[in-house]
Length: 302
Image 1: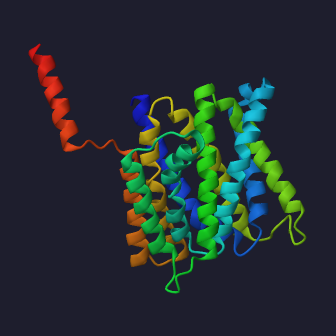
Image 2: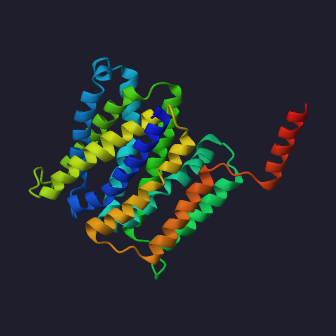
Image 3: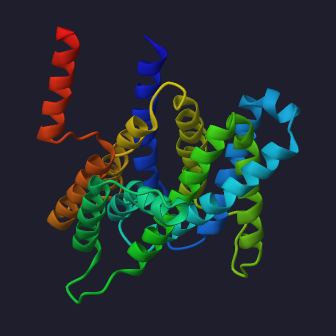
């Protein structure tokens, strides 16, 4: 099996881990201690990745540490807010709302880098917002606090992905992975320490099982694979693969937590899914196809 195909399969497997992590996290933290959960999750992921990337750990440079710390801030905010969102809404709904990150990225790039976005991006953004409205807005025309946390978390995660793209173009991003998760562990530890009600050694078995699963599979495995895969698979294709996450999340929440897959969730989630496809796929208008075929014909004739 060629490397490109291998990483394609590994990425799809990773999106399954990401999707399953939504109900697993909800089950693990119950109604409290999301910061402590993230602290242990990042700490275990740091230990595992330190062993995997030991050759990079031995020769850490200040540049890699600074870059990793810079990536950690939006990542911690994004994951924490989405974890907080899970405590206030269903895991399946949270996974679909979190998928709006893919559409947020080009809009943020337009605002920050002044890069003109194609018409399809605005169509995708409007489609995603309609889908988000269907899922999140109640009959009283108000948005749930859990969905609000998730939306803000998606924005932070979009900032993180933009920074990762920037670091990847500047050089090898692998040396930044361990310092990034180490910084995440330190930040969440400090935040958890400021909470008066933190129980540092929870007795619930589901808490520790959730940490093991999320640290090893949805954190250490997926973030490493997604970075290395960029060498063999385009960013556009990787983004499309990520769309499997909310699908896996909804079905995992149904089987693990018994959550109902409602018609609003299917319609709204489907629109967000469609929006990301519109944003990422390379569409050609009929006149573009005709021009392309004409150019090819002239080339063949010449």
